[in-house]
Picture 1 (cartoon, rainbow, N blue to C red):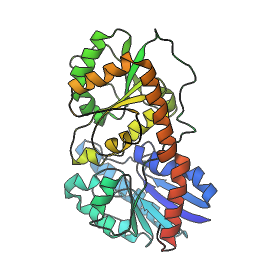
Picture 2: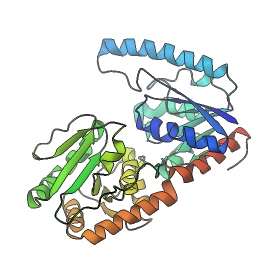
Picture 3: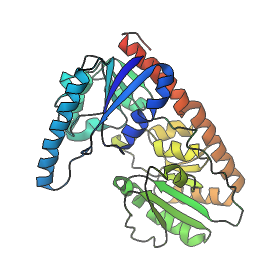
Length: 345
């Protein structure tokens, strides 16, 4: 049995849940045991200055104890996700030599990326969530692998109930409140659609409610891990607007893949990995602006039910073939074993 320690952020942090924690059970089938050391204090410091100091002290002691525990156990390798304490390079250098950095965002953009570059340079390998990130991290490490963020297609499944033609069609966006800036970009387009089509509703699933300037009628559901799949299953057309910049080109299209796994057709901004996924099959539409392209794409899906359904079915097949947990767990297990044995994948 290969023994792996992972050092991750908060218990509900998406990168921790999807790129490490969901692999714990499935990798046991590949003779790999993962012990996850996550932060009970949370991944990021609070905004209040005094609370930040308390958070920093607690986090230092928490991470120090974790490093001591890890080094006292016979782990074959250690997976880290960015700095152990936000924006600080602290105890990473004291971890064992088989350290693997796992990256699913353009985190090198934060504060010039000096801390993450040091960690990448000192790691035995870097696992990136897409090709864009892989190309960037080649500057700091020669041992680069690409493993997209996996979707558990045994969990994320299409809804059992088939809709009747007269039922409401749901446009949906799922994400943290930090991503509201993107949904606000297409507010005018969404407002146009909602006013024109009385049988269309907008569903927002997040940690807090958005504040729209124009949209008055929408449905909000507070995100919870327990109802995550159920909420994705409510969506007929999944939305993923983004800016076109270096940060978004580093994103791993996970929201898009979750929509697709549940057989939702998608309308997304054509940037980064989104474009790569769109090329694999006819799963929806990619847009370049924030208004006319979004209206045109959404209207097509609203007015062409058979195409909308077919695109949703195509999307699930793409996820099953390229991005499923079962498929990617095989790849990740080979990478871990080869890194430990100093082989090449």
